[in-house]
Image 1: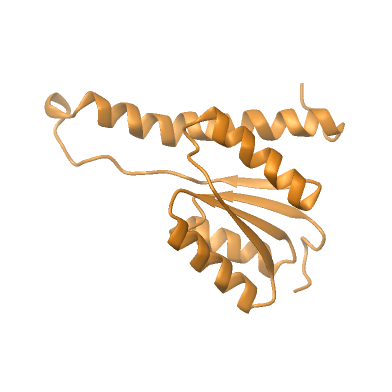
Image 2 (image 1 turned 90 degrees about the vertical axis):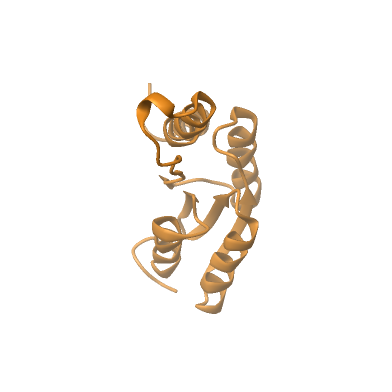
Length: 140
């Protein structure tokens, strides 16, 4: 699989289905080695199979992006496996229950915010920390 991302390493959170799966497959088609991260192990393995059958290289890492310790471990494990991280699609996201605002459970609100917002922030935090540590980019 040769393409514009040949030799690069791409991370996709929420890679077990939907846009995340499509992104992971596209990164692989363009030559990137792909880390697929998600809580959905079965879907993640399906994404890996699709990539590998097409001749790509990918690894699945089960991750809850709302938890700093898991995101940090995801980035560290990605570096251990592939030695670098060049790009990321911080795509993991969930829907909450359909409800009127006055009856929306606070726990559900917190869960949606933690995955959809905090998860992106955590991923960017640890990705940027890695890039700064490796001396690539001009992140400050």
